[in-house]
Image 1 (tube, each protein chain N blue to C red):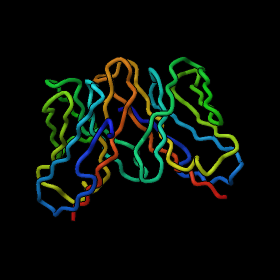
Image 2 (cartoon, each protein chain N blue to C red):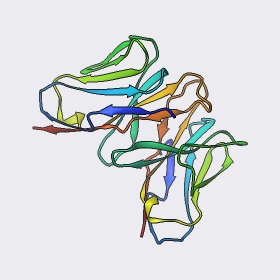
Image 3 (cartoon, one colour):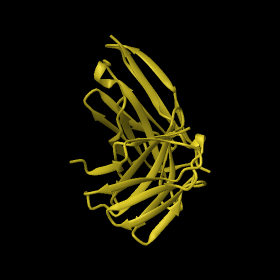
Amino acid sequence: GQQVMQIPQYQHVQEGEDFTTYCNSSTTLSNIQWYKQRPGGHPVFLIQLVKSGEVKKQKRLTFQFGEAKKNSSLHITATQTTDVGTYFCAGWRIKAAGNKLTFGGGTRVLVKP
Amino acid sequence: DADVTQTPRNRITKTGKRIMLECSQTKGHDRMYWYRQDPGLGLRLIYYSFDVKDINKGEISDGYSVSRQAQAKFSLSLESAIPNQTALYFCATSVSGANVLTFGAGSRLTVL
């Protein structure tokens, strides 16, 4: 079945530094979504990427969808303590029966002040 | 009030007990989902429903059942709870065509 892998599983970042988390699918995706879950909270939708090679920015967050629509990345610049949480990617597979999302395992981000 | 409400928020139970987790939504979405979260495993789909008469198994449906009582209500049952069902459970909704999930606050279940 479809698998979505995220690396790294954990990311310790010094406040002010940049980092990138990666998402890889075993199959071609229709689109990919990113969610953020704050500690003790629930996942909250951040963004959806649909087109091959698409790049979208939200303030210090840059999201990219790969040319082959099998991978994605989230880059955060000048990390702040408010960036703490777990970031999940989730992919919709082309022609998938049931039309449902498959989530990656998440990257848990810890920020050192 | 929350758009997607889950009850109970926390529950401790014993092996073999029947447990029901309830989810209600005021978003008017037609699609509802139950996910399970375990550390390092992300969110895994248990069951989903695209309308009141539609129920579908997800990737980890064994040991669970669901009921879509109304468009706004979707409940998850564990007929005979076992310890490895200890997890954080999330209900989510979406509207057909948009595919973006709105999650409830979660129900933390501990099976002793």
